[in-house]
Image (tube, rainbow, N blue to C red):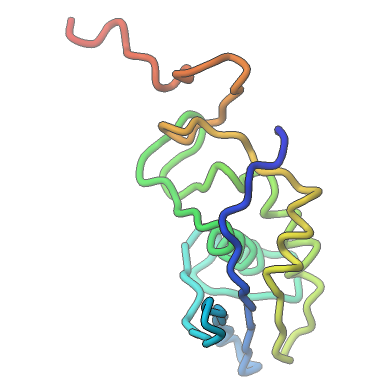
Length: 161
């Protein structure tokens, strides 16, 4: 782990969970535009642990919820191919913290009632939960004190034989 990276330009967002009480949970993201208007859209779902969002317990659905909220907040997308020890579908920057986010925010949410988590709450939480440092080229885990390119970006000396 390293020093917290610079946060992207943080838009005012509110993550809103809605449950019909029979397992059809969904999450919307309300984003405030610079002109004061709002746009609301569904949270992008990345099937990391579960095919559905969920909350109020510490299982795979809440892990997926935590993963997707952090990905949206940090403007990150899953890898499309392997990068170091991280496989396709992973987001290396949050690999070490999204489970903590699940335990701190998602698991304690009450079952049934609607809920909200704001971008300000997430930004404050990230101050003490640093992101994984990754190579700027391939997004593999990376120690910047070793210089660039990272080990995974080095050319294969056996290639071309």
